[in-house]
Amino acid sequence: MISLSAHQRYFVFRGSADMRKGFDGLCGLVRDHLQANPVSGDVFVFFNRARSHVKILWWDSDGFAIYYKRLERGGFDIPSPSADGNGQITAQTLSLILQGIDLTSVKKKKRFHFAA
Image (cartoon, rainbow, N blue to C red; front, side, top):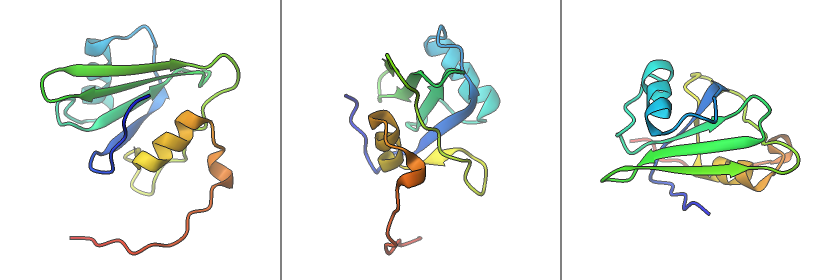
């Protein structure tokens, strides 16, 4: 299992990704479609059209790493786009997605959030 940290930013690619893409192909999607820097330390999440496969790409200080998961049954639940449309999600949301939790049934209680 991948270790998720609240200190990283997570971005979901909203289109369908070709799961044959490797490091360079996914970096191209990050640069061209997400307008982000793949070596920023942010984590980028890609799903196939059927939502049965997920690839997670991140720069791990000295190289790229990919986490790849294929479901034998069912599909991943994708969160609806945020208000700003940048596809950013939290580590907790990504964890719920990978565990197969229905995101529409999750209710999060209000918490204080300090905005610097």
